[in-house]
Length: 462
Image 1 (tube, rainbow, N blue to C red):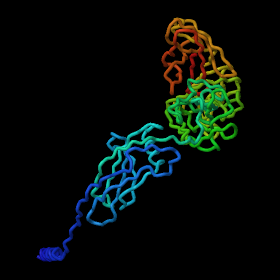
Image 2: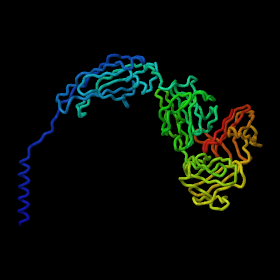
Image 3: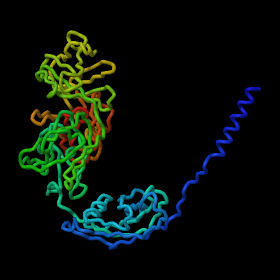
């Protein structure tokens, strides 16, 4: 019976304890009244000289929250484009307890331009204020005011091209430092008077500049000093001096946006590549200046076009130096087609242009010698290639075709379909094998092909 006795004592103790508790109640506060918002103007049209002056004065009525706890009322101003229902408004926090706030001309100008407004063009915005207790309880929304703002144009931080055109040039680009550049792959699109954008190939280890005039080196846009510009940064307009803009560490196609208003350019990767460098006897075994191969899909399957001028051998490296992984061939002669990280130099039977392929997953490689490039298509009933001519000065091939009517064509090697180039590569480039026909209109055309940028092969039809 002792167990039952203990249980009885415990029950009595609990009942006694409960009886001794003090009853607690949560405090409650009465609701406030939604504030009424007013503004000093229903339209704003200022000039750059007004930037620091007050453009709008907002006032609102006291929401009359009955309780002072936990502090003065909080007020949030929300601004959005008219008709957007404040889905993603610009939010400005007013001073707690104050029944009004002001915006300078520069503040409201920046807000409207950030919403997509255009210079010197009226733009309608909507404004409201939300009140609450300091702890964000009992939020109350005011009426909505519609205000028309005409943004003014401030002087751009960097001088825009007076021609309204902008070009990219450099060792990182598909065309190298050749100037004038081609306007198909290396010209920006002008979005407005101070903004230019475009999709461009940039090769790892290279550099580039921006040109306001194609073919002219007298002025350019570059950066003040070297540094990490993989995502962009500040740029400058110079007639001399400055530094070339270093390309990102990873090759690929990038969207570049240049904003002269802010003096900032940005890079956004569109399609990134993996690279192998091809140092060898033909170029003094220097990886940093060696041609590259590319795995456009980053799947371990690489290719590239290389002019190998000696038979002293070469290797493949996954970095632009000898600090990474270097691949050779398992056979003493260097032609087995089987790769090894401890192998002999790779080699080819004779000098010339080669289409190199390598797979770092299967550890295989191949070299297809190219004796000629030819044009074939609807213009010649897909028969008898028009042989292209190589220019060592421009590092490209050219050929002339005459089409009786619009149609398509391809570029193929060695008058055979073992290797051909067609449309479908990254960023509007050509692709090795499996691509589509290159379109051509009726008439006589000069076709120019460049294979200098690994994985980004260009065809220009003029």
